Length: 249
Image (cartoon, rainbow, N blue to C red):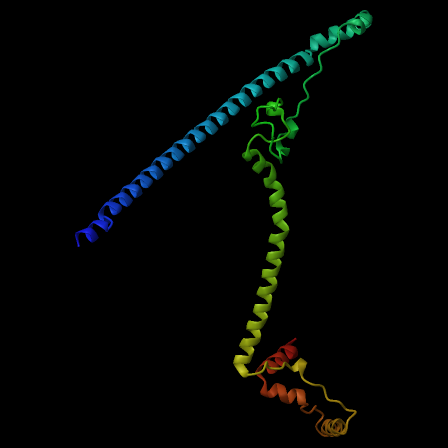
């Protein structure tokens, strides 16, 4: 019995080793997570520093370009006195001006392209854009949004008009449906006006008999007789009112 008890494995020691191993793995996972968080924070810091440096470089480039453009404009725009002096001495010193050093080309003013910045500048973030504020491309998403906004409004206008027309058509159809439903609720069928009453067809046998009866009544009394339309109007208040208005007019 003693030998059998010695041969059995010690489960408590194995369980303790498993628990210790599990704790070690948990601790290693926590350490890896903290390291990953620190790496992400460092990466975000570097990105922010790069953005700040790019913004500062763009601002310095813009300042330099503005100063150069202002100086060039001041040099190229002569005063009235300089214009008169140049005009008087142009005949005498024409050869000197032709043989003198060439003038520095003026920086092209791209100010009209400020509102046409529909696409972002890919060289701006890499600090390779040398145009600065005169770049025809956008250096921020706000400029892209401002440039594309009028085109988006123009594209949405026909949609709004079509939706309004569809709404008006639907309102008209609903109004006609409501009118028809009200008439059907009032009397089952829409009442027929006197002008819509069926005319008497004198070509048929019944029409000929009706005509003979009317002629006989007119010859005896000197007045007209009630036609089917007038009979319908007698029982129809709408037709009766229409006939009264016609008589008054």
